[in-house]
Amino acid sequence: MLRDTYIEVDLDRLAHNVKAIRERVGNHACICAVVKADAYGHGSIECAKTIMESGGDYLAVAALTEALELRQVYPDYRIFIMGYTSDENLKYVVKNDITQCIFTYEQALLLDKLGREYNRKPKIHIKYDTGFNRIGFRDCEESIEKIKEIVKLRNIECEGIFSHFALVNDDENKRQFNAFTTAVERIESAGFKFGYKHICDSIAAIDYPEFCLNMIRPGAILYGMKSFRKNDLDIKQVMKFKTKIAYIKSLKKGEGVSYNHKYKAQRDMLLATIPVGYADGFPRNMFEVGEVTVRGTRVPVAGVICMDQCMIDVTDVEGVGAGDEVIIYGDEEENAVTFAEASQKGGTNKNELLCRFTRRTPRVYIRKGIRIKELNYLLPDLPKEDY
Ligand SMILES: *Cc1c(COP(=O)(O)O)cnc(C)c1O
Image (cartoon, rainbow, N blue to C red; front, side, top):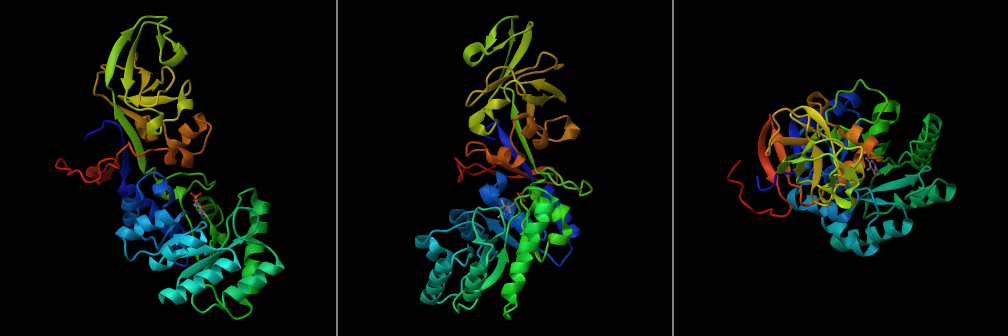
């Protein structure tokens, strides 16, 4: 490998998670797998394939560019843009057979016009806002009338309708769910039937099986992030973040380390430098709280985390040497910091940690414990003779 700092993505674990979700929701609900933000940092191209081959039915992204990235590689997968696409870009949705979220009558009309122009029938899912107040038709009489007009348009296929939970509490979730299903029933009372109705993200799909309807939109859970309350679902963290020690030296008590010498050696110590910094996705605020794992031992970050490097205190690691593997995020079983633990320490959530990884950090894909592929965003075309 050309860089010691990398992300390991276990595709078997990803496949396992998809199957576990499938088992949980049964066959009546389609899995619309959320692979936005480069599949939460795991690499959307590789992950999309594994997900679809393991029981996924649909792929969901946030933005047109993400949809087009997938479409270039996968001509046949169903791809859904959950977010807004501007009027001027709707033609790319049509030309590339992508399903678009729609929440205004005007855009529905425009898409209908484009459908006629390109001689296609673009699919849409209508976004119905039941209280998140982000995008969507507001929950009111006028919206229901407008949606009834949209479903009549001839050159678009009104395939689905969806909403999103704000996940405030049980009562509010129930209220949102009821608002959604009531609106859907009223629209459908005129005789029209939506193919897909969906409101559940990862947490809701597991904690409220009765809200799954006939489609769910799991994201975080695919990648093994557990935020739901029911803890009987066996899902596994897909990603690990690793590097290797670049350099080790002895420090005398009282010597300062890194910017502003905010860290001072409390004793004579062994200090290791690792080639990972906040430009790789290791948050700067992990200084003082961050720990990494070397030879099975947890060791603290020593000094302010720099853009490309940081230092760790390896005094207590027996036999430590340059070149040793360092696990920044990993499994509990290997005494590593999980994303759940790191998010608490870093004062953020697991998804944000996953999305922070940058182009510089290669993704290494493994199957059955063996490296099968490396994705290096900086050198995408470099041959990988080593694998
Ligand atoms: C991101 C997103 C999801 C997936 O959310 P998770 O919490 O990761 O499961 C589902 N639906 C919408 C509309 C989203 O934006």
